[in-house]
Length: 268
Image (tube, rainbow, N blue to C red; front, top):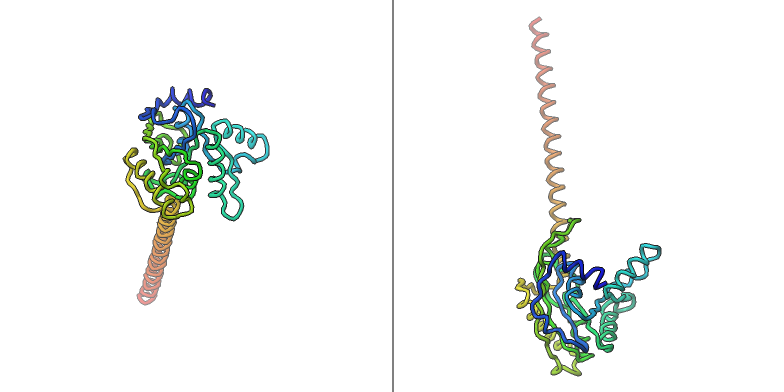
């Protein structure tokens, strides 16, 4: 996949990279990145010599039929790992388990602490469950990564990608050994996650918003829904006003015709 996809990506988009030397040449490490676009999981592995394993929902790997098998082969090829989201705690526990397994093999594990793509290009609060727990359980260094301008390549609603140069800034590895054995302390998990998000913010230059991206998406969706409902109500009000005006005009015309008929009758 590095040849089939990574090569053409680098030729077509010419991504620039700063801090490549901060990726360990060997051994486990966690790449914690902001998340602007679906293409983030392609551009980052494309510029690295080592394999990076991300997590993806298991449905991508279990869909039946020819299309399903092709989709599964594609995601396996680009280093995606299926995560079963069923069970009491769902994807969080599955992500932690998967990340630990990858790191115990001495490989690179990629994770997006925001939990989902940014809805507006800003950096949102990191979720402490996956990143912090994997880091403390394995002792692997956390390498902050900032994807730059990847959201501009194929904005929502656009079919054809825009040929432009995205960027990748890679920060120095962060050591959290001082928190070892404290993986059940929610304040430690929060502090570790916030420290990583701060480093990502410095690398990316994004505006930081201290709410979860999922909450922001709900707010945006609710605002869009409210706007649509307001527009619908406005159109309905205009239609009703037009209907009432037409009825008033017709009544006036009818009255005028009636008055004219009575006048002509009187005159005759």
